[in-house]
Structure formats: C-alpha cells, structure tokens
Image (cartoon, rainbow, N blue to C red; front, top):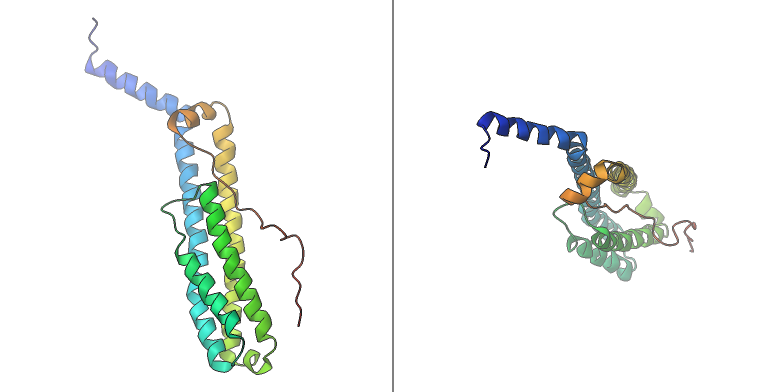
Amino acid sequence: MVSRSPISRILLAVLAAVSLQGCGYNRLVALQEGVEGAWSQVENVYQRRADLIPNLVATVKGAADFEQETLARVIEARSKISQVSFDSAPDARQLEQFQSAQDGLSSALSRLLVVVERYPELKATDAFRDLQAQLEGTENRITVERQRFNEATREYNTARRQFPTIVVSKLFGFGEKPYFRAVEGADSPPKVDF
C-alpha cells in the first residue's frame, strides 16, 4: 500500500476544492443564501403589515360603530398568520400554507376598507388617512419583496439545473425552490359593491 505524503494530501484536497468550485458548488451556496435572504424580506414586510393591523382596527373601532363581523374577520385572519412560520425559505407545500393565510388577511383587509368607504367621517380623520397610506405602502413593499424572492428563486433554480452544476446540486442536495404564484382569480378585477 502506497502512503501519501502530507503535501500530496494537501494538493489532493486543493484539487478537489477547485473541482467543486468549477462545478458551481460555491455559486449554489451563494444563490441559496440569496433565496433565504429574499424570503426573510418577504416575511419582514408581511410582519410589518401584521403589526399595522392592530392600529388600523383601533382607529376604525374608535372612529365608527360598524359591522363587528368585518372587524372580527380581520382579527381572526391576523391571528392565523402568526401560526404559519418557517426557519428558512419554505418548500412548495409550506409556501402554499403561508400564502393561504396571507390571502385570508388580504381579503379581510379589503372588506374592511370597503366598509370604511361607508363612513366618510372615518376617512376624513388624519389617523385613518395616515394608517391607510401605511397599509398601501406596505402592500407595495410586499409586491416588491415577493418579486425579488421570485427573481432570487429563478436565478437559483436556473443555476442548479445547468451542466455541470446539476451534478453538484444532485450530489449535495440543492433542491428546487418554489415560486410565489398568483392566487386563483387574481387576473380578474375585484368587485366593489356598496
């Protein structure tokens, strides 16, 4: 049996590292981290929205006596969101659960804002206007961060499927990441009925 010297072992390790570098391992790690970072930003803006909701509810409650059912739906939807969390970017099933909870909140908020249209004195208050502007800004941030998440996911999924990186991705378990998808019916404009 041939014994290798420490220098030949080091050279072999360096060659193996260079081979992995050339096959895209480090790039996959960087892209995977990009997906994780983008997912953290998505969670961040959704959390901002969830944090604003108690203020919206308190403002509306204090300024108008209106449908308690609508208010209850917003509170219930917000509580469901806190039950869905992940340690890292979600897989396809987890993303679907997360999106379902967020869609429930979006629906409840939409109904709340439609009900508020019936109360002109509420719309006129500075606190409500400021809060509504904050919610609109948050919804825009959510859209931007979801887009960035999808871009990071696309870049990662594309890289992991290219040759020779696909060999490394299969060898080291770099699985496909899911995209945010539009909810069914999102292509139809919402109906506002007074």
